[in-house]
Length: 142
Image (cartoon, rainbow, N blue to C red; front, side, top):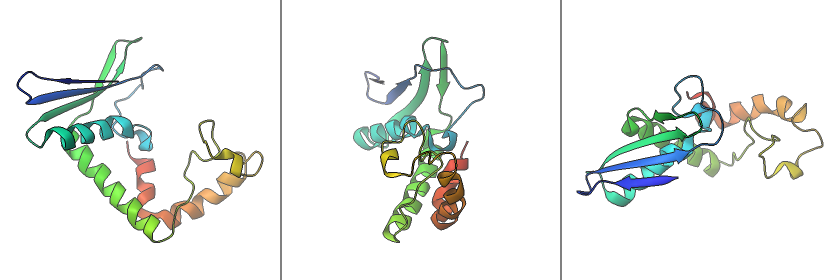
Protein backbone atom coordinates (compact mmCIF):
# COMPACT_ATOMS: atom_id res chain seq x y z
CA UNK A 1 0.00 0.00 0.00
CA UNK A 2 1.16 3.56 -0.58
CA UNK A 3 0.82 7.14 0.59
CA UNK A 4 1.88 10.07 -1.63
CA UNK A 5 1.87 13.62 -0.27
CA UNK A 6 2.13 16.67 -2.52
CA UNK A 7 5.15 18.96 -2.16
CA UNK A 8 3.05 21.68 -0.55
CA UNK A 9 1.44 19.20 1.87
CA UNK A 10 -2.06 20.15 0.74
CA UNK A 11 -2.99 16.85 -0.90
CA UNK A 12 -2.50 13.19 -0.10
CA UNK A 13 -3.18 10.08 -2.17
CA UNK A 14 -3.65 6.78 -0.35
CA UNK A 15 -3.61 3.60 -2.41
CA UNK A 16 -4.65 0.15 -1.25
CA UNK A 17 -3.11 -2.34 -3.70
CA UNK A 18 -5.25 -5.38 -4.48
CA UNK A 19 -4.06 -8.64 -5.99
CA UNK A 20 -7.46 -10.15 -6.79
CA UNK A 21 -9.99 -9.28 -9.44
CA UNK A 22 -11.53 -5.84 -9.54
CA UNK A 23 -15.20 -5.69 -8.57
CA UNK A 24 -17.66 -5.37 -11.42
CA UNK A 25 -19.42 -2.41 -9.85
CA UNK A 26 -18.11 0.61 -7.98
CA UNK A 27 -17.88 -0.07 -4.25
CA UNK A 28 -17.49 2.06 -1.14
CA UNK A 29 -17.55 -0.17 1.92
CA UNK A 30 -18.59 -3.44 0.29
CA UNK A 31 -20.43 -4.73 3.34
CA UNK A 32 -17.51 -3.79 5.59
CA UNK A 33 -14.96 -5.74 3.54
CA UNK A 34 -13.36 -2.56 2.15
CA UNK A 35 -12.84 -0.64 5.36
CA UNK A 36 -9.07 -0.56 4.89
CA UNK A 37 -9.15 2.14 2.20
CA UNK A 38 -11.48 4.23 4.36
CA UNK A 39 -9.37 3.74 7.48
CA UNK A 40 -6.24 4.73 5.56
CA UNK A 41 -7.94 7.97 4.55
CA UNK A 42 -9.03 8.54 8.15
CA UNK A 43 -5.49 7.92 9.47
CA UNK A 44 -3.95 10.32 6.93
CA UNK A 45 -6.51 12.98 7.84
CA UNK A 46 -5.79 12.49 11.54
CA UNK A 47 -2.02 12.67 11.01
CA UNK A 48 -1.85 15.50 8.47
CA UNK A 49 -4.82 17.64 9.53
CA UNK A 50 -8.17 18.77 8.23
CA UNK A 51 -6.67 21.11 5.62
CA UNK A 52 -5.28 18.22 3.56
CA UNK A 53 -7.37 17.01 0.61
CA UNK A 54 -7.43 13.21 0.75
CA UNK A 55 -7.85 10.91 -2.23
CA UNK A 56 -8.15 7.17 -1.52
CA UNK A 57 -8.28 4.36 -4.03
CA UNK A 58 -8.19 0.63 -4.55
CA UNK A 59 -5.60 -0.18 -7.22
CA UNK A 60 -5.78 -3.46 -9.12
CA UNK A 61 -2.45 -3.43 -11.02
CA UNK A 62 -3.12 -6.62 -13.00
CA UNK A 63 -6.24 -5.13 -14.52
CA UNK A 64 -5.10 -1.48 -14.53
CA UNK A 65 -8.18 -0.51 -12.50
CA UNK A 66 -8.00 2.34 -9.97
CA UNK A 67 -11.24 2.70 -7.98
CA UNK A 68 -11.35 6.12 -6.33
CA UNK A 69 -13.33 6.53 -3.14
CA UNK A 70 -15.95 9.13 -3.98
CA UNK A 71 -16.43 11.75 -1.27
CA UNK A 72 -14.04 10.37 1.38
CA UNK A 73 -15.39 12.84 3.95
CA UNK A 74 -18.91 11.43 3.66
CA UNK A 75 -17.63 7.85 3.84
CA UNK A 76 -15.54 8.69 6.89
CA UNK A 77 -18.63 10.17 8.56
CA UNK A 78 -20.56 6.99 7.74
CA UNK A 79 -17.78 4.76 9.12
CA UNK A 80 -17.64 6.92 12.26
CA UNK A 81 -21.35 6.26 12.77
CA UNK A 82 -20.78 2.51 12.48
CA UNK A 83 -17.86 2.70 14.93
CA UNK A 84 -19.97 4.61 17.46
CA UNK A 85 -22.73 2.05 17.13
CA UNK A 86 -20.17 -0.78 17.54
CA UNK A 87 -18.80 0.83 20.69
CA UNK A 88 -22.30 1.17 22.13
CA UNK A 89 -22.98 -2.45 21.27
CA UNK A 90 -19.76 -3.69 22.86
CA UNK A 91 -20.27 -1.62 26.01
CA UNK A 92 -23.77 -3.11 26.18
CA UNK A 93 -22.31 -6.63 26.11
CA UNK A 94 -22.96 -7.51 22.47
CA UNK A 95 -19.76 -8.83 20.89
CA UNK A 96 -21.38 -11.24 18.49
CA UNK A 97 -20.41 -13.04 15.29
CA UNK A 98 -20.96 -11.48 11.90
CA UNK A 99 -21.65 -12.84 8.42
CA UNK A 100 -18.04 -13.98 7.81
CA UNK A 101 -17.83 -16.03 11.01
CA UNK A 102 -16.58 -19.52 10.25
CA UNK A 103 -15.32 -18.48 6.82
CA UNK A 104 -11.92 -19.12 5.26
CA UNK A 105 -10.35 -16.05 6.86
CA UNK A 106 -11.85 -16.37 10.34
CA UNK A 107 -8.90 -16.66 12.75
CA UNK A 108 -11.29 -17.71 15.51
CA UNK A 109 -13.01 -20.51 13.59
CA UNK A 110 -11.28 -23.05 15.85
CA UNK A 111 -13.64 -21.97 18.65
CA UNK A 112 -16.75 -22.86 16.63
CA UNK A 113 -18.44 -26.22 16.19
CA UNK A 114 -17.18 -28.39 13.32
CA UNK A 115 -18.63 -27.31 9.95
CA UNK A 116 -19.98 -24.18 11.65
CA UNK A 117 -20.44 -22.30 8.39
CA UNK A 118 -22.90 -24.84 7.01
CA UNK A 119 -25.50 -24.79 9.80
CA UNK A 120 -24.52 -23.21 13.12
CA UNK A 121 -23.57 -19.76 11.80
CA UNK A 122 -26.57 -19.57 9.48
CA UNK A 123 -28.87 -20.44 12.37
CA UNK A 124 -27.28 -17.88 14.74
CA UNK A 125 -26.84 -14.95 12.34
CA UNK A 126 -30.45 -13.63 12.47
CA UNK A 127 -30.37 -13.40 16.28
CA UNK A 128 -26.90 -11.82 16.24
CA UNK A 129 -27.99 -9.31 13.61
CA UNK A 130 -31.05 -8.36 15.67
CA UNK A 131 -28.99 -8.00 18.87
CA UNK A 132 -26.31 -5.90 17.16
CA UNK A 133 -28.95 -3.57 15.74
CA UNK A 134 -27.45 -0.53 14.04
CA UNK A 135 -23.95 -2.06 13.91
CA UNK A 136 -25.13 -4.77 11.53
CA UNK A 137 -26.06 -2.14 8.95
CA UNK A 138 -22.45 -2.02 7.81
CA UNK A 139 -22.93 -5.52 6.36
CA UNK A 140 -25.40 -3.99 3.92
CA UNK A 141 -23.30 -0.91 3.08
CA UNK A 142 -22.34 -0.69 -0.56
